[in-house]
Amino acid sequence: MEKKGLLIVVSGFSGAGKGTVVKKLVEDYGYSLSVSATTRQPREGEVDGKDYYFKTVDEFRSLIDYNGFIEWAQYVDNYYGTPRKFVEEEMNAGRDVILEIEVQGAMNIKKQYKDAVLIFITAPSAEVLRDRLKGRGTESEEAIAKRLKRASEESEDMDFYEYIVVNDELDTCVQKVNSVILAKKCEKEYNIKLIEDMKSSLKEI
Image 1 (cartoon, rainbow, N blue to C red):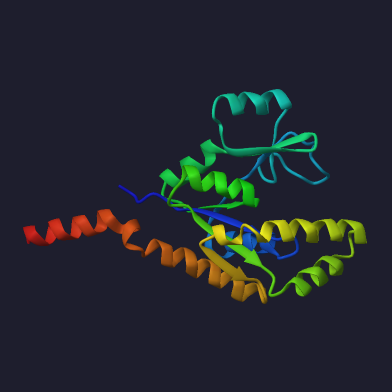
Image 2 (cartoon, helix red, strand yellow):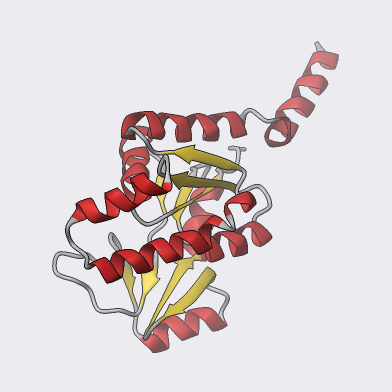
C-alpha cells in the first residue's frame, strides 16, 4: 500500500513572496496545490477549478453543512474555504499537498491533521518587507500601512509554526522549503510501517 502524502501548510506575510515560492515548489518538485473555493466573482482570466472553485453562497453553505471544508472563513461579503475532498484524495493517493493559507486557517488545519507540516515564509527584515510592498507600486501608502499592521499581528503567531524560512533569494528559499519537507518524510514517525516491515522481514530471512 502506498504511503499517505504529507499536508504542507505555507503561510507568510504579505510581500514575503509566499505565493511565488509555492508556485515554484509546484513547478519544480511536482507538489499538488490545493485550490480554494470562493463565493466572489471570477476576475478577468481566472479559470474555475484552476484559480478557484467558484461557488454560489448557497453551494458554499451547503458544503459547510456537509463538512466539505477543512477550514473556511468569511472576508467582507465573500466566503473562502479549502475543499476537503481534493486534499484527502491526493494524500490518500500518496501525493504531497500544499496549502497556501492564512495563519488562522493554519491553526485549524493543525487541529485536524496532526502530521501537517507548518512553514512560515518571511522577508529577512521588517524594512525589507516594507520596501517590497512599496516596490510593487500597486497600492497606496494607506493600503501598505494596513498590510504592515496585519504583518505585525501575524508575527505574534510565528511561534506556532515548526519551520521559519527566510525568502531572501527565491531559488534558495524554494530549495530550503523542499528540504524541510524531505526531512519531515525521513522522520521516524513517518516511517513506522517501514520499520515494522523491516524488522519482520529480517526475522524471516
